[in-house]
Image 1: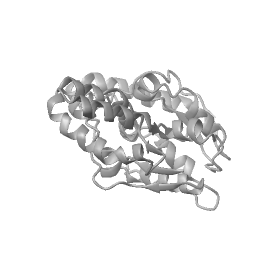
Image 2: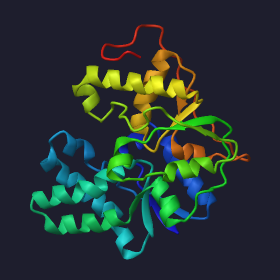
Image 3: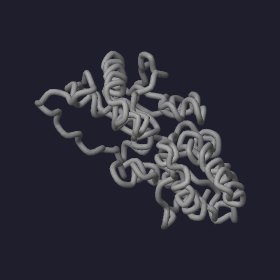
Length: 270
């Protein structure tokens, strides 16, 4: 297949390893990956904070960038983020229609129908659960809110993880509980967010896992920060990075900075 990669803002700017891993994984499986020029934000941050009119132009850019999937230039669009795919499917056409651009709304819906979160693409479209990965670690999986409740990816990620050679998948206590990130929620409600992510970090520690994984670096960033401040041994690794790892080419994420010696900032127990 010819697959277009939507890198997403956070991955492109802060965690490019997830995009690199997605490309490596899909190419190893025999697919042709394209990274379209001109892509930017999907508009989720603007819509969620009440700037829907300002998001129309952002939606228009996203739709224009990935519209070639409708003409057969690519067979699908994939993103290593359930949150952003959730926005593409559930926000973009609504924003366009509410602000009087029915044509944009229609095209947005068509593009969204060809857009998949990584585990959806692998399991539902490519029909694969064993991707030939090797990752000799004990891993626990956090089902992020958007992937769990908006996309309903279900057990697709865990089916992929169970097929990874050398990986021991352990349950995460209270897995369906939010990590407290929620984009700007973590800024506007810092005390609540800090308490929530402290609970999540405690759950990761209780699982005994070396690694916590998810399909969204936004949530992983929040959890990893709490784990680091608490001095825990577990660390966050994106699902794509685990699936990209093989015996011949093991994935080696960058070392997380050492935990600070100062007290945790206000708003979090971690």
